Amino acid sequence: MTTPVLTGTHLAKAFGATTALVDASVAVAPGEIVAIMGPSGSGKSTLLHLLAGLLRPDAGTVEIAGVRIDTMSERQRSDVRLRQLGFVFQHGELVPELTVVENVELPLRLTGVSARPARVRALEALDRLGVAGEADRRLSEVSGGQAQRAAVARALVHAPPVVLADEPTGALDTLTGELVLEAFVDAARDQGTAVVLVTHDLRVASYASRDVLVRDGRIVDQAAHVGEPR
Ligand SMILES: Nc1ncnc2c1ncn2[C@@H]1O[C@H](COP(=O)(O)OP(=O)(O)OP(=O)(O)O)[C@@H](O)[C@H]1O
Image 1 (cartoon, protein in one colour):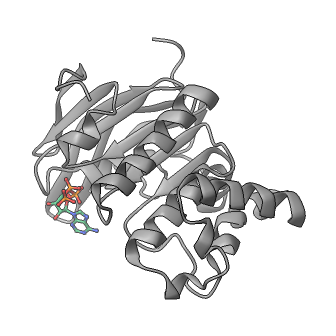
Image 2 (cartoon, protein in one colour):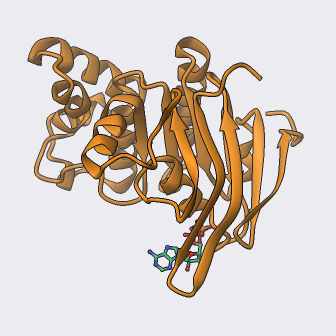
């Protein structure tokens, strides 16, 4: 494998008496798309949140682009998240009071891109996901599926080296789901973005080059994707 851009090594996490993850190691190369799969409650979201630096592991390490993040302060980790990561999580990364395009611009504006080029890039990203028509509506006024596509546009707009997504097509019909997956595939191919997706959907996993199977808090298998070709 080429040098990984995202590495979790021997990760463990418990919530009180509940062991969510034990000794989980995963490494993702630039341009790779990895699907994390497994039964409900097996630890998939916990793994993704640890890799994102949103949770701190009880044991183990997380490195993004060669820099260890699990020992950083919360402030340093949020700076790494802003610059190096794009997220599509189920709750809360978008701001309901802002318009759709303002939400998508945020990662650019917060990293110093000036207003006009940020607007152009945000509109391009929304167009790519078929929601440019909603750009000036407040996020709280668009449908769940439109908001989900805006979240994907926001995750990709600053061309981060790593994108992490939890059920990114959960609220979408088949066609718009494919639009989202194609956007990830393009980012992986054209920009070398490493994409890690949590999904229950075999069709979504078929876009991945590798599956990571989690069961009872352990990674039980990591294999090149062997499902039906798309
Ligand atoms: N914040 C938390 N507090 C307490 N327990 C938690 C918390 N987050 C996760 N857990 C527990 O940790 C275990 C793993 O949860 P996790 O959300 O990682 O599973 P998952 O595989 O993503 O599930 P699903 O597919 O249903 O989203 C579960 O037993 C869950 O109840």
